[in-house]
Image (cartoon, rainbow over the protein chains, first blue to last red):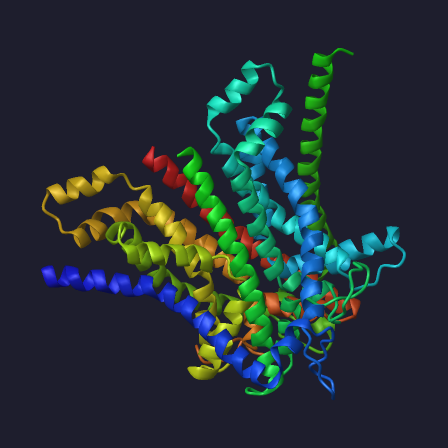
Length: 291
Length: 284
């Protein structure tokens, strides 16, 4: 009996250990292939080069155009998602009657659950043509359309995590503000928002990590031309879209081209990892404050 | 206008702005569904559902992709659910305080936020090349299983946490061992909650495209997979393939396939919500 119990506990522990194995696997795979890549391409050329043409006869491996493309699209997404997400969080947490909340929250969940390939379709065939009516110089593939659609996609994430943070603010603080004659807007903006600040920041950073790692929307609607530009009107390529582009072709294992996707993947992983760490640290802090 | 009236007006204005923003978000969901419906509803037919890919858009169907999606998702569930539930039981019932449990917990939260395409790179290297599974159903399902594992673990833990501790204590009082308590008392009570989480995790996996593309599933596959080792394609990849073509007829196909995918997702989510409602009633 005792031995059986012991075996069960070990079996369960091994299953739990698999998640550690996944992390080790991800880091290991990316590291091995990235080092192999960096043996042939100097690290400074990779990180600071301004031309990304790995498929040309004279290949260049400067990753900056991909990084800038990623930053550009993610920034547009955040410009859309942050104000929308925060306002909806404030409304749902501080204004909405329970019935309205029960109605709206599932719809927001649906919005967050739509597959990204569907958002890609929406960005390419609805949002971009719509924008082209107002912005004459807008190319068929661009950073603006997918950025906006990506913002709509991550807005529910910002909203629900920020709302959680606001719900964590003790009632006493709100009641104090109301007792002093503050309106609900003043209470929300000057008492609740600052009190929930670290939680809300954590939510926004997590949303940023989502935007950086988002793949299908940009692979479909942003075009696949690595370009060092800050203009949202022309085609760009993100790190994720590049990985998709190479995966679509039949790249032989062990070639330099095959290794580029791991090197780019490493950069992507490190970027989102740092954002996640900051977000986790901020979340831990706001938990300490009020519990 | 005195100061109080101005503050009240500002408050009202702010509330209206927030409501407007929410309407905008809900409106974009409506616009999305309306666009896809108007582009693709005409293509929906029995022949489309049961047909195979074709060079001519109007002859093409999605049976190969639909069957592929089903096959991959069931295999993913078969891999991820036992491992995920076991991990959650360990973290919640056995090692809650230990250092290793805390490290694993931190790790899982981090894994949940790793971009899905990174899992694809891991799958390409580990399953497709090193373990020599090729671009098979098994390789795709293993990759997706690693991807949804954190979601399964996190939701199972929630379900386990919701089981009142009095149930555990009375089981111990009757002389049951830890595993007997977990298996005969805790798991049955937590089952609806676990199932809800599993369905939601799998509905995330069924819409995933990027990791499957990076393991190389976008080869032209004209037949439904019939074993774990068959090459395959899935619905989202077929959609991506059709969207990427310039011809309008193929984009209509993509829209019709999106409608099928959304219907599938809606069914899964409805099942999850139904389970959740039943579960909540039972506990209260």
